[in-house]
Length: 359
Image (cartoon, rainbow, N blue to C red; front, side, top):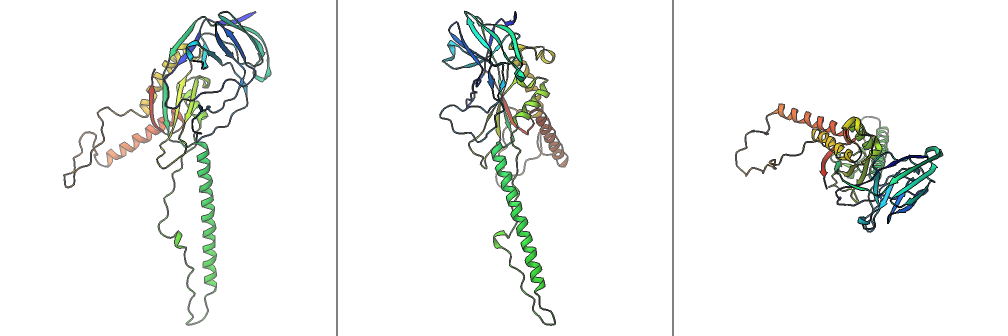
């Protein structure tokens, strides 16, 4: 019995990023068949692993553990216009459930997918027909988010160093107290006795206390995805997140960049956006942009940094947008806290900047 089929294949075209990241195809249990001169890869077991860097790229400063392989319903095609690269595609209609160990055969302009094992190794006995005669290219946006967070490994290293410094400081304090107690006990008793000189302090530790190092939270892509899902009322599998970070964290480090895309899935966006399938990515991006503008409004085009006043020139009076005393400062601080809270609600971290890229 034929359980279902899709009338077309949707290929998502997104704007390029400064650093292109690619994901591995399913690791095992998938099928590859030929349909009208193009290869079609479906299903198999894949891990939620960090992105694979292109050849020749420097090693990233972040590392994320890969999850255990799970059955997937991912569809990949190698189109004649793709210059030999695999592209992620989506059935424009109901599609088969995630599976591995299934069978697939290409028959002209369509492919048949048969059986396999689904979640929890449950045996599947369904048959699906995937039409490949129609290729629908959907141009969608990509959101660039800059978050105030550290790469995971760097955050671990900093916290370990701080713990070691705190342990050493506590041990040094105990030694100082013991030396002071010994000096007090060694004071000669009686009239005219000279007291022993106090223990010398380490000159290296003298002076003002060093300012504490600001510790940033480690990036949590899973939490970012959950916050996005709650904000847009969409399931987590709709979102594609790609992390981009510097090779090393320096004093000029200014946040990590997360690239966000929305997949053109069906059956998930009608209730919220009255849009589904190929129309879902742009509808979701429009709503996300509205939320981000409330959390972190983009600067106005006529906003320019104020030049410093010349030496001896009179100070400028507070005009439009200028300082107006303590009340204005309090209002500005309150607005900054509100915006930070709104940003954390959407992306789980403090939002430093965002930009929508379109094709």
